[in-house]
Amino acid sequence: MRRTAAQYGITEDTWATAKQQVRSVILRAAYERRMTWHAEIADRVDAVSLDPASSLINDLLAAVFADEYATGGPALTSIVTVSYGDLEPNSAFYTSARDLGYRFTEPFTFWTEEVHKVFAEHGRPEGRR
Image (cartoon, rainbow, N blue to C red):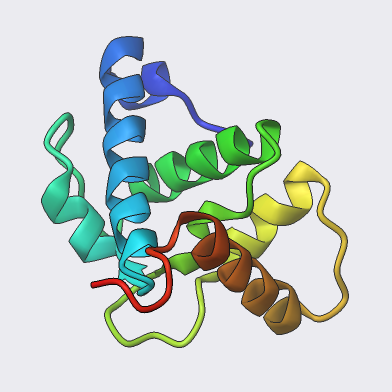
């Protein structure tokens, strides 16, 4: 079940701004060809008070994922982990992927392929700093 602004007691404008800020943090990490994590995102979003362990951050990530899917982009949220140094995303990423219609039998393989697609599309060109 997708949650929305009203379920969190925020306006649609605030939801949209928070979602855009989440997307921007992820895109910055993608450009730098690195992973990001919930706390980094929470620290950089100011449209709402965002706890890294909250359902709100998971729902914002799911909304960003859905938006990217709708435009034919790669799974942008594949580069988001729960904590710094985690090796892959939490189960909510895979649930969101399946909810969107992705079909895979090996989650780790699906995830690594999506990470490579994100870096290929949004990452800084190789050799540039």
